[in-house]
Length: 220
Image (cartoon, rainbow, N blue to C red):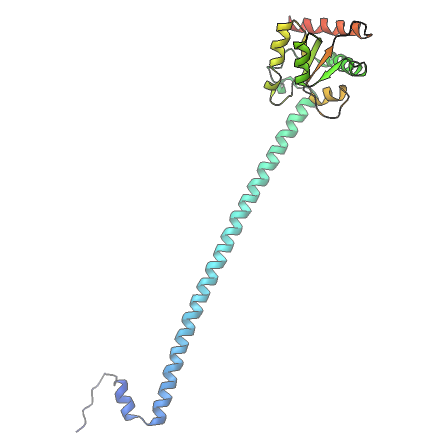
């Protein structure tokens, strides 16, 4: 008597019992093939996921680095423009660009006269260049007057000199450009301060006295 169960799949052991040896081998191959296909599909999905993740990370890193580079370039351009505007203001002699602590500040006519005298004093060996040398001449009582640059950065490095000049009763004045003061002193580098020294027999004595009087009028 044969009992047939409808709607149920026979177990694999029953299939093996009913099948021949060739049939069993064929079913084993089919099962192995299905297993390999499933594994390959799983591996392909994993590889695709890994590659997709890597591409996403690459794109994200590229955009982040690109944004950082653009931001850095923007900051650099803004800084350059700001420095260019500052340099242009100093070149044109804009008084608003000058530190208000740089007082008294010589006008263009007096600046030209001072720089010309500084150049002659350098030729006559009556000039000391630099804030330290100017300070030494003041302490030793050898200074006729002191010239400082209003664009010294920071200006505080020369602000002790006016106090010392007032204590020693020596005239002092600011000019706008340390580069121009350096050229007048006969050097290629900027000079933030210089001192015209005393020489009783100097041919520059009348010019020195004239500049001293003009500087004193600025202080009044």
